Image (cartoon, rainbow, N blue to C red; front, side, top):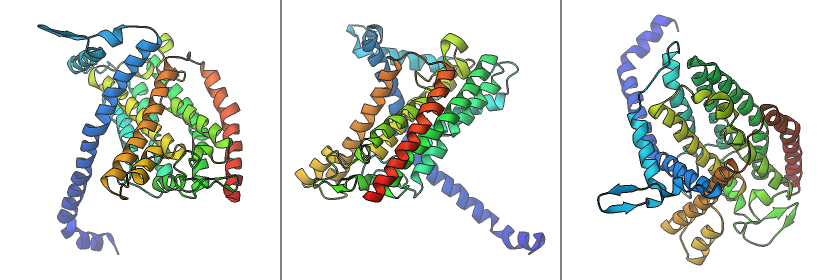
Length: 386
């Protein structure tokens, strides 16, 4: 078929095709906006609040826990909520500044790419039975791939800022995150080997089955801890989980891996020239990604929505599969595991000192990659025995 015949055949259908595309985009946009409004934004706000509270406790600083609001006769510290309200108003009122000599389009788009990458992780995050946006058969591959979007956004931000400190911070991000994707991907393969599937729902279901450790069947319900992947191929998958968690910290640029934005060397790194809500989008995306990766870690290694709470809801209270009790029990189970990993990220940040860049790269290539390979081989052997 030549070009004229092709246009003659398809041109009359173009208006209908365009309207169908627009309708599909609208149908996809509405759930995304609901996720942002109902999940991502509260996670970001609560994450900032939790970080301030915990950092104040850890470092014995009363400010984040005492800032309050005084309105007439009402005077209460409101458990530090006043600081978050003040910061939100400050960000909304700041000027949206683009540095002279910078690349305006890339500078403005960069925060959206970083936030969009964090938001896209929520599409496959299994909050509970029947509480997942999408369950593709390549779920793990999707998570690892979509996480690479942040590197593109950070590199765009650093280069478009026309600031040498921003560019150095962006290049550090590329080196750090690109390196830690290797042990992170190897660690994520271990649950896949135990399950035989990349689908997140199947990985969770496998952890609710009767536990098998090195070919030995343990006659207890898998939801009661021992069925979780972290105990499979014992003790190698415990090491695998630690490696995966360290790689998550490095991908999130959380201390002690905050080299791309360290204030003592690079002012603020790739964030130096940003202000107002564009600066806020970077941090909203960071806290959203913290929650999402904590949820992925809980899904891969800690049973996801299966566990003691869900087991009690189903077997103790007789909740029907797919019913309200089943969904609520699974959501509570997933939430407490994810929240625990989220809080641990905050704890690590305010406890450990920042590493040097050479130490960060040495940890990755000299220790984490070989350890992850050994754990993967041990997991494969355990999967064959099971």
